[in-house]
Image (cartoon, rainbow, N blue to C red; front, top):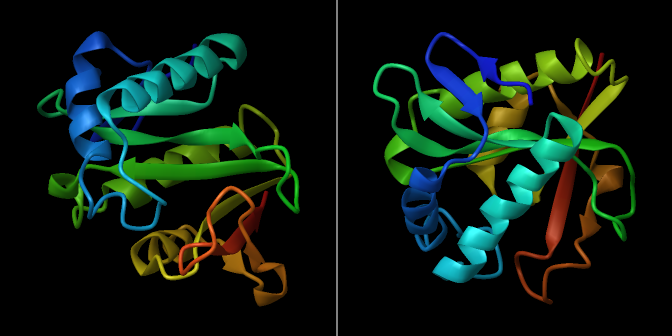
Length: 175
């Protein structure tokens, strides 16, 4: 499995010690503000296991993210094939960080590493990112990464119940 390193971050496989802070992150209503709900411990643990299985199978996917300086787990970032049933295909970049890690540029730094890996090592011609239309913080990261939004691609996410979180946007960047 590939690990990615930046000046301040290590994107790596998931560890047992990640499960508690991952569960805390997923139970935080502010972190999960643009998702239909928070996750209980069982669903949070299952997501980490699913992410690790993807890393084991492909060598890339949703990596756990830690700070190099402290070794502290702060969230996840990575690449994953777009889920079936979406109105588009491709490989998606994404990130989710604990609230204490917000505002330090970590999402952008991790995103740059992920894009470099996707375009370099994986040879992808294009990478996209998806978020709820109202998620200004994530959209700002996408913009800093050079990704471009086309309003013609906005869609209602079939995996999200009716309501204000259903409308989603797609950003893209080509190699």
